[in-house]
Image 1 (cartoon, rainbow, N blue to C red):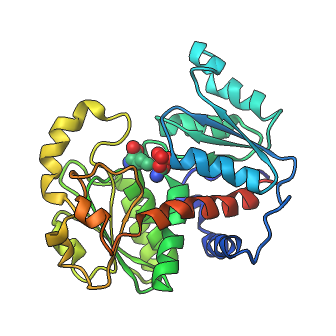
Image 2: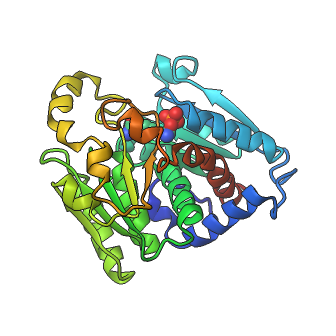
Amino acid sequence: MKRDIISVRDLESDLDQILSMALDLKSGKLKKENALKGKTLAMIFEKPSTRTRVSFEVGMAQLGGHALYLSPRDLQIGRGETIADTAKVLSRYVDAIMYRAFSHEMMIELARNATVPVINGLDDLEHPCQIVADLLTVKEKKGKLKGIKMAYVGDGNNVCNSLLLGAAIVGMDFVAACPDGYKPNEKIVADAISIAKRNKCISMVISDPHDAVKNADVVYTDVWTSMGQEKEAEEREKVFAPYQINSKLLANAKDDCIVMHCLPAHRGHEITDEVIDGDQSVVFDQAENRLHAQQAILLRVIR
Ligand code: CP
Ligand code: NVA
């Protein structure tokens, strides 16, 4: 049976193994050469991307395979061919499809119709590949995941939703501080709380950023306006102003707290230059880890 990675939930059974594999790929313990020789990944991008595109493309090349960048402008999707027909056709040529979509429904529709594995490269609900890289980064920097407290401050968006699930699965305490009206997806919050209960860790959504970062080992933020929400940008700037990660807010966290951001960052908005360029920031190691994490994912799903 094919294996899709649409949600972090799809990683629940083997997230630990994927993280170990990513570490081994990074250290060179696990050889990359020819691991996916002759395999092709189709990548459909409805939205822009720097990290996801380049890390998947380079990742496939290093594994001996090949990646195809496809934009809806160039595909017949742009002229009205359905995503279902596109999925069926691509499945006859390629070994897996990575899709960055505006809507989660379209992601599901593509996965339902593809006969090859589908990997979510971000949609409006989740960003699972990002979270594998994030957990890898915390594991590297802190030596463990259980017993670590991550505070997420800002918009309850796709990244926040996936972090909620990822943290609960690995047993990491997670507190998100998001303003009312911008809380994460309710179903995901409920699922994360129930997984966290099983794994004896905390999963919580609150409103006060100062409370959230208290005693945190990791402080994480993302943009206030995600791709596709540009019309709301002005309103969001006002609502999120008290949620900026700056030195004052960070002073509430542990002294050795690390700062994470999935990037791209809007400097001076959700995070100050001082913090993102400061000693506690690990954002570029985190970005590098997209490559190692995704290679582990590709090796798990492509046969
Ligand atoms: N973090 C992330 O997914 O970045 P890109 O939008 O550049 O792919
Ligand atoms: N939440 C952001 C993440 C970008 C990688 C967005 O969806 O635009």
